Image (tube, rainbow, N blue to C red; front, side, top):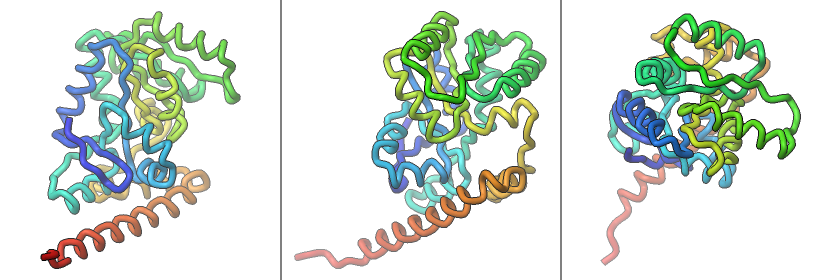
Length: 256
């Protein structure tokens, strides 16, 4: 898939269905691959952290999760890009995995979340092969423990591994598994609690208007206020700055 540069981030472009098809195609390879679901928060993280930018931009697929990223693609490249949100990708990938008999694994989140996830998935996708679910301890994992987890995931036959550790932790964990886990790994962050029914998703009109973040903020104000106040402001500032720079360069007279 083609990628377009947005400040510090290279975002994959294409129709929504192309993203689903591409990820499923990668799953058939049974090799180490990974997908990043990018929003404004991730873009700002990559802008101020070059090491993390390298982690994200090396992904096989970087989907434009946030509506503002699709707007930016149109502003910079006149590309009418579909939004490819993790909350849409997750159920669609599970449906595809069920129909194509691709085992899936859930790594991260609390035991309560994984328990509810298993209950929901078993009901909603009865033929889906759940290769495993694992909630890591809230501490630094030893090398021995990590190797056990790697072996467990590989032995399970999982083709799709959904990682639920939050950005940027989940993306860093995924890259740490390079050459070790033979599956497509996807950082789904807050999409799993919504899928499992532990949190609600914003109404469709808020999604289309780019205000889904506001709905999430209303659900978790203490945890998300600082993130959104900072990242959204920085995003608008950096985007405006880049647009002004581009327009000035266009107006600059050619040197004879």
